[in-house]
Length: 277
Image (tube, rainbow, N blue to C red; front, side, top):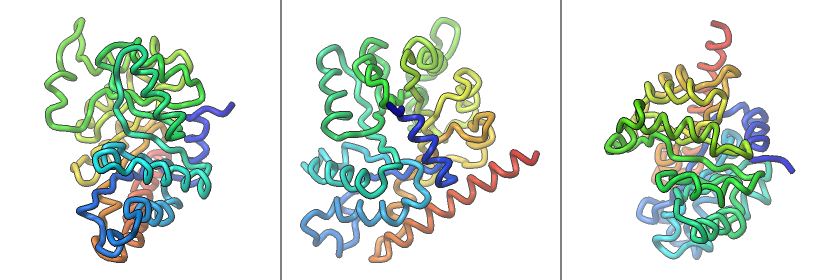
């Protein structure tokens, strides 16, 4: 059975892209014409997906935007739509789950069986046993929070732990002890590029999901400079608000396509120059 990272690698190669489009629909920000639809979240997502699929190596719906308003059915419909129209584009469910024993089992069933996600984000701070219900799905991706992009992430993630920063300990465990099925990746924020370089040095060619470019102000060139692996891949640059809300008008899908294409072009220009150099 093909693994998540096989699927992701083929998608990146086919589209010549390292862009991950976040599907974080906020009803308050949707164009009025879409808000009038019976299923406004689904309709917005459908148009964004169609508009950006040329450039999207992956799609990443953030579950909170759906569950907060009781729109889980529209999340399910969105995923079914992507899988029916673009079966070669992997779907990462951004849920940041992490809990003990049977509860973690239920979260894994939620992500992989109910929502049919190809990967899920998880929180490791309750220990490695809480990740096992996810990692046992050998064909699915498990993307572990390592050093997140939010300003307060250093409160814990920068603490010293046995002589090194806690995020480095997470990176080491994720790339070895927790990675028994070779299906683990890491979340490392673009807002801390020096940390991204440290993590890359620890984990080798392990895939990294990098939020924080765009609305959060992460420096794309710095991210690519330190984060790409030896094959000029190994990164998924996640963008959400800067793409899906590129326009608040009825041209939102066209604007999203242009923004995603522009970012994809920027990344590929850097990758080409890195190979030449």
